[in-house]
Image: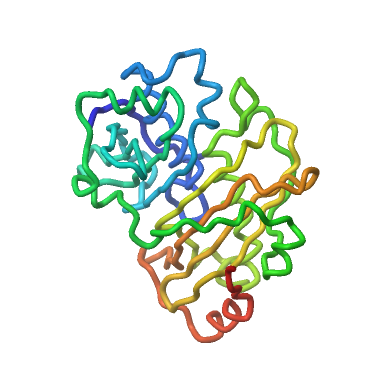
Length: 289
């Protein structure tokens, strides 16, 4: 894999868990992707603003925490697979440990042809740490309207209007800001299930795997609504589905899946939820069609 990004974790990029927030984690992965595509002549400077429209799916795994001031290197490679054609990952350059990775499905258009023409590609078995583990199937819910999602049990946890600074110069929503809007919405779930621990910063929620599939693109000035469905509930691991709608058009542009856990912020490790918390989550659990 080729080094295409180097940076570090800033204090203002860390969240209530005191580690690199998923929004900025993905922003650094996106920098790695963009730099790699440009260096390999898979993307022109003129097409940078259209890159979000060229990504059909993203699959992200978070293998380790990145704490403040951690030196991060971003690595890029093409992938010899019909499912995903590009992999990027961030490594802690002090320890060599992989912090997070992202697979991208870019199988259409000129960019797909150029990726196939690259001399070296990794096979899925070469990047087992980045390959899907907890999310192996796509949840296809783009056909739903907000009312239909509500009937299934989804509920609104985020809403607003996308701003220009969240978009490319072509007006398309940057993927890491899509992640950021979902991340900003999650306290509307966790705050109702863990009101005391959520307020006193003893516990936090951490995502370990995330997949997003797109149907069209949201852009600057578009209103949006983030809807959440709790899909699976376990003592240590939970699975969620997120849908992002444009409420003006009723169209679902983003269908996302997440695997998450609760984290002891002092011990820095995953915790097992008690029966009371599990009961609150199970009472909101939905069944996907």
